[in-house]
Image (cartoon, rainbow, N blue to C red):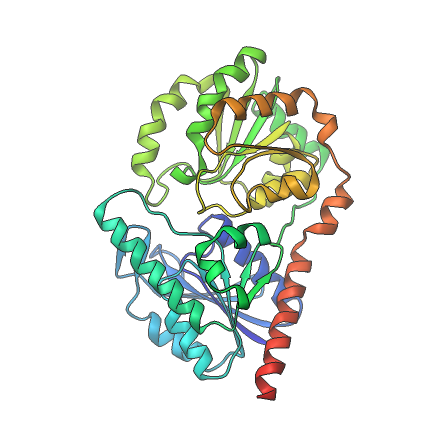
Length: 385
């Protein structure tokens, strides 16, 4: 099958959405499908076309930016040409360009599957409110044109105004999760490099307002009072993150205050992430709003034997609820977060589950197989009409 995937940002941009699509596209290509990703050339130095792990990537040049959105004059022409040479579409929301792609797919009688990753919530301001409404309208239009809409969990789907509107089209497919094997030497090397001598709390994310970094910062004094050598390792982009400059400036004094207890690792490769997870006593996901819908890193950490403490957002709480491997705390509650982190650090063995139990629930191959079956079922149904 020839499958066209589309999303605004793709690798090397780092976010949960881009990692999800990269894993899905690569796994589908491994399974023998011809996969193309249509995305933005958000950095002019990126090639307009390249082959990445068996996936053809086509990037449309960006003329201008609107907050985190992009304007791509050639996107429509590329979409039309690619629609003519593919059998199915996998579109990933939020995405302003999704309705046009979905319409092209439906006109050609193709299965059009939307995956709804999160709500879009831009920073406060009149302009961003307008941008939010424009993208929301585009998502709704794409939803009406789609053949099916995929959500990560029933939990998030039940609380999402968008997904509730399209409940008859809903398919729940667990997200793709994978962690590279890593040597004991690599795990020890990371520990020695950063001189980790006390409890280690990990956070893996972009430095972005919705991630709730300030909640962890507020919880830190209580944790340090019990564990003076406690350390936070932050893995992920933290400098010049698109749309987050003001947020980074606001938190800079707190990062300076906690400098002995807070280390930015930057963006790590797959081996580096595996070593990171293995060095943690606990992972924390203190996200604040529905732009976070699951937190793939929680399951990645669990596969490495590391429990998670997550905020009680729909979807985000599911890895802990489904595995029992951690705790869930009220959204934005730094006191509850500190208490939960201390419990997990001090009673860690109570939260550990066998790796095979976690792997049975979540894997990239399982996700790709379920998408493959969905496309085949939809294609057969369309052919019968």
